[in-house]
Length: 168
Image 1 (cartoon, one colour):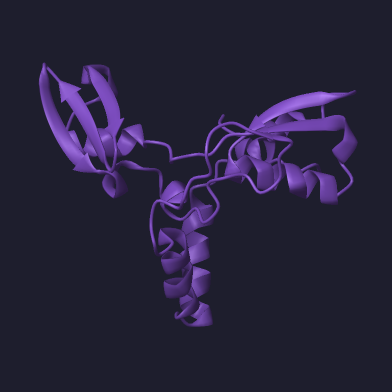
Image 2 (tube, one colour):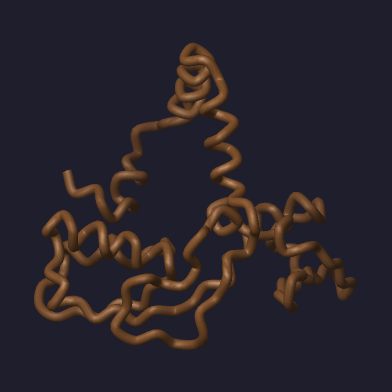
């Protein structure tokens, strides 16, 4: 789990949390919903350059993660090493979709910011492009899209447990 904000509602007293841009938005949401008092939270902001999606690296290399020796980020490239051989990929091919769509990688709400503010990875939000395509569909096509998404649900409630604003 990458977002520690899910634990804020369970803890009492003054709490410190390290937060990326997406995490700080979750913390703000909890504060706005009166689930956490702002004065009880010390937010240590960390600019996020984006998280590498290991599944994408597996697909790009045709290898299982157990076969990977190393994954490193160098500037706008990701370098994966398998059996001593290095393979380079553009950063946009290796990051999580949400990171490609992130417009605020530097937390907007923090008490202490570690490091320098960072810019978004992609100029055009990848997730926004998907939303735009979905908006262009008819209501029936949109309903079919959502039925397909929900058909994968096994009612494990991991989404509810992993979503900071969900406190039902």
